[in-house]
Image (cartoon, rainbow, N blue to C red; front, side, top):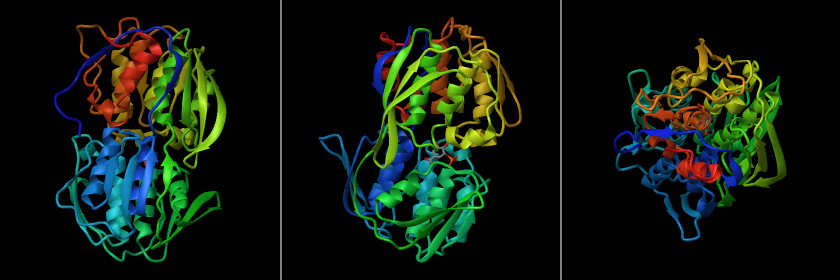
Length: 450
Ligand code: S3P
């Protein structure tokens, strides 16, 4: 849904980040809130929904399948659910834009309805692997006709009643787990998922909140989730907490720009999402948490972040699932830290909105950082607290490959650079963080942008 032609931009050095900000609603939770509300019987109310293009793609697809979804004057979104099993045949193709989460979760939903749906997406999404969802959903009875390499466009036909499966996740993916759970909702019997490595658990938490019958156990060090199918969901009123993956850019910027002292309010602190905070703290980052509370069934807190002398470290690959979207931002912090940061076990980063290992290696190198790409990670020699040189104003910009998190990470690199950093396209930022540039201007007091 990234429309029009590329929108290049130069992010110039900026003064300290100060004051109090709030980042928009969590993207993962926003998708799930719309989907479960669309399956409940009656009207749900969602406040704090992220109004990014990815979430709006989910909303448009749910509307096309019969749910009424609208934003009301109070700023909250009202969703009229059709009931589990009640989705209708969409009249046209479902355009998923840039959003892998929309695609994989909605495929799960369609899998156990007797409807046919065509999924399309932009150039970035059309390169991403879908076999990870088509395989388990085929085992439940869905039928897929995919483009070569099991990529979009894909036409699928769901089966009703579908067949419950017991499935051990071969990759640590909350999207795959969620696709199977959503398919299991309209499937008689018990759908079981075994998670050798825990991933974000927003779907499980929210399913319980909407009244689904779910048991979660720990067996031999693995998480085992049983969903008892064909349950009714009851409508809810819920609030979406701030997105820790969006807060990540401001956390990194405040740590690296001298004199910064910023408070980011209402940030989701689900422990399946907070790996970056733990890593930055062990690099010497001053990140203080206060006001821990619960919002929408999720832990949240306010974070005070101050400029800090960061030291490079070797990052435990076991932390990767809890910070999977935060590595681009972490790489920026590492490139100005003291000493070497080593990351490994990050093959999954190659199949995100872009190949985030090679794209970040190229972008940071262009901005003057010392980066070596390995098969499964990056090794970064930091500047020891000095700004990056940046890109020359008449030279080639950093290339973002339709990836919002590359664009925002390189914007942060520009803030703490000598010359500024040019990027080729800021449009993808609107997929997850439409207010990013405004918030950056607010936090830096004058705008960190040219
Ligand atoms: C997400 C899961 C992660 C993450 C993505 C959002 C989700 O993807 O990278 O941005 O909402 O479930 P994977 O499941 O592919 O790891």
